Image 1 (cartoon, rainbow, N blue to C red):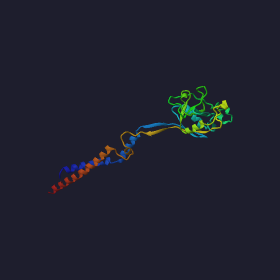
Image 2 (cartoon, rainbow, N blue to C red):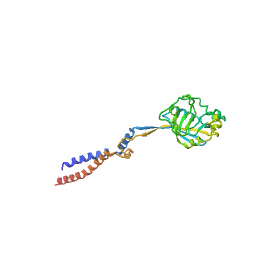
Image 3 (cartoon, helix red, strand yellow):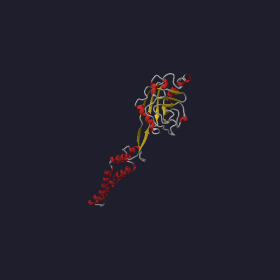
Image 4 (spheres, rainbow, N blue to C red):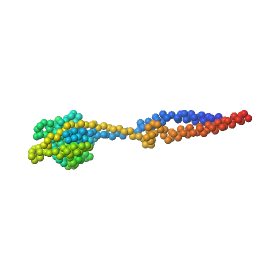
Length: 270
């Protein structure tokens, strides 16, 4: 019997064992899952938003949580306590600002409007990146820089002359037309000089409701694998090549071994 046949059969058996060991799709799924699990995570802050409900419509403001944390924190604290519910817009200057946030505006005495506030004051907080653009929201205050409490204003048009002296803490993202509408109402003007910037008819601030900010985490996939391979069903190019070779080689060698074995038997019979 030709000695090459048993040797070739041994090689075939070894290759078949290799195929069995490699042919485990679960290994590739786990490898891809590990690669994805080890990848970095992108963390992005999503700012808080304030929904300011008025009798002229809704104003939505994106707050600058990271740029003005003290001012935003004070505003959110008050809003979450329903502090701003059922107040009036007591100061209106067309093409400048509309102002509210004074609890005195709830009574029927317009002469004390603008003089009230919450029990806590906060320091002046400014940032070069937070400017008085059109629709900016800022904190009103007295002549003392650190006297802001609850009153706030929204810019009707850019007011860059206020930069550095008043704290901007957000921007209108929806409802700028509502700001325009409020800014255009009639005020007393020269007919009642003490109330020159006070609206003739009541303009209501119904409420301020906050959607709180949060960290949004997104998995960062490693470079290289396609979406199909990361999904867990693929093997990757190298793994597929190994399996194909391990399958193809025995398929070629088995017929050769069969022929050699058959010839060996014939020689033995002869």
